[in-house]
Image 1 (cartoon, rainbow, N blue to C red):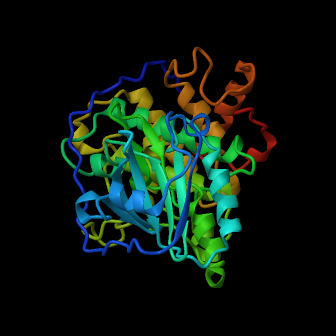
Image 2: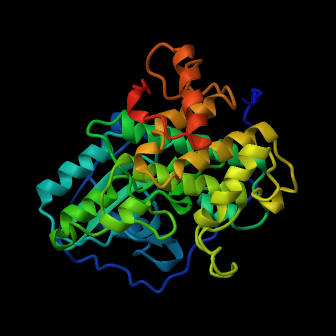
Image 3: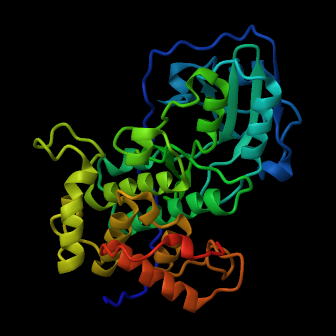
Length: 387
């Protein structure tokens, strides 16, 4: 078994500028009646929150939902940067789901999301309900998305990639294992991982798939996700578990390792899918400790081999065909804890709310490696993680 050395994450200052996505989407009208709620300071962590948003304030904050304020568009709606009178920057998401859902049901789901706060999740500040519109107001995260930085120039350095992978894992593990009710994201991808100016990862859009499905009753069996990231069992049958998110996270790891898009039509026939192209290379890299065929050439071999080895281990096991043979996100977090010791919680390891059990972690890491190397004699259900 390979002995991995412990290193520390390096915080890389941001030197990049934010580029807005251009769109011809029309602004929404401001004439409909509405009732908007902002969450109190102790909930949002922002301080000085006003007790009530009105729809017209959001129109003013986003300059009439101007294309100049458009940050991006996704499956759930358009996102606009907003400036509140108290000086806060926010991101206002105009949901596509419309007003078909009852106000009580919508508020119940949003209030669940609003109670979720973690350093690696984007916090919800407030929401707006009108006759035909549903809007969510989030903390503004200033440094664009992982997709923007990973597939652009200059190339992300290796230490930053590892840091982002670990942060996203912690945010996702929190949703799966520390939230009640637990939340399955359904659309984990590099464009849903936002970055702050220190390149700390913050997972966005959690809970929105449930809102959209609850709203449109005629599409309750519709598979929601992004091609190239969806787990095979979810894409084929619509069967959804937390292991579906694990697969999608594994695809993000492959992006970080290789620098390739999840689906790339410019690649040779049969190699368009990142996952299927990478599968044999993952096995080769783990068996021979040879990483050049997988590593992003833009890294120019500037990576720590022990970290690359474990990133590949994590990716290999997360994208297994069988959902039962994928790890839970808490196990992935523990695997990253062997890469670095980070002081994010005043000395307590991130993801651990109880006393650290080194024997348990060692056994979990051994299981994790057996999974990566293809052993079939295990089940992740035999472990009870306290993350």
